[in-house]
Length: 415
Image (cartoon, rainbow, N blue to C red; front, side, top):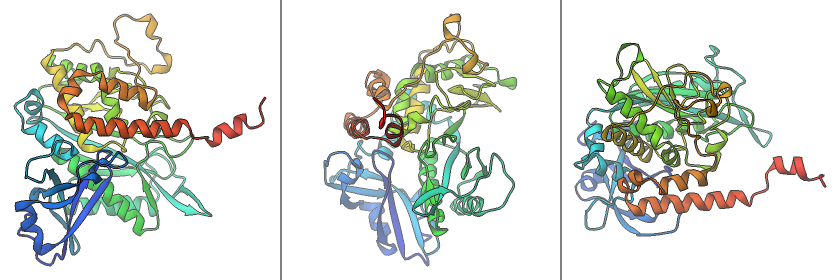
């Protein structure tokens, strides 16, 4: 859809995300859209920092007409953020990724040949006597019709109407858990599509009286939700899943920067209740072909990154993935041999060949690793990282002071 295709549209939602990936929008009458594309639309830029401290207030949203699409009599468009004098503001996540892709760098070079599809997992919950319970008790690939699959399928229809190819959707392992699979897209288009997909599912679920949650692990004792990226670059994976030298270096970049990347891929306190939990949740920086608990899995000609969860800011996640992979390629890094056995049966002390580094156990650990990783520090604007880290640190601190139900049950009558 182009900027000229607004006949019958009354309003345009100028959408953007804050540093934490939360969706926001400013809605304009359709007649003002061309003006916004040309000059940007003034707005309060402190919204870009979410729960972090307030900063610059006068900023401009510039719609990207290539992302304009219509649902009913309302259109939606992704925006980048400009300073009041019209310059790109690198503290905005979408601007940060777009700037990275437009620079003369190894990351930009990689992005010209890189695409990725995404497995977006979520839970659908419904109100019940003051609680939120799973919409069903179905299981992996369950064939039964119901409100849950109807919501996901209707969301997929809207996404396809917007030009985003959906490969499939199905019930996942947890009760009320579903997966929506997006076809491979270039870097910026993939991040835009993920923002749109999450918002679309939320809105369709809300219309059905349900809550769609992208919380990494919302239900105690049940499977967590992931956001697996299936990356494609010609020449990295040969027939049979054999890696070329460049493919090996590409994978090694993820192993080398795994702990820093976790801060962008697994960005909440709750994220670390998904990692290390269950047979398919990554716990260490290892790669494999068969092992579904590996951080990187080679499957069907794609290089799958399995650590990310759907709470991640899509723009920062995609940028971080490209930074890690590009550094591996630039340094011709070696990933070592794959670890095909499941982690529960592997003793890292018995092997000197397989490189084995545990992923962070907490958000604070991941943020420390991010700030210690020169490749990431050099790739991102310092203001964006400061806002992200300060905001997430405050969440971790608040959580440390919170008394949970588990603690009350375990310790209230002890001692």
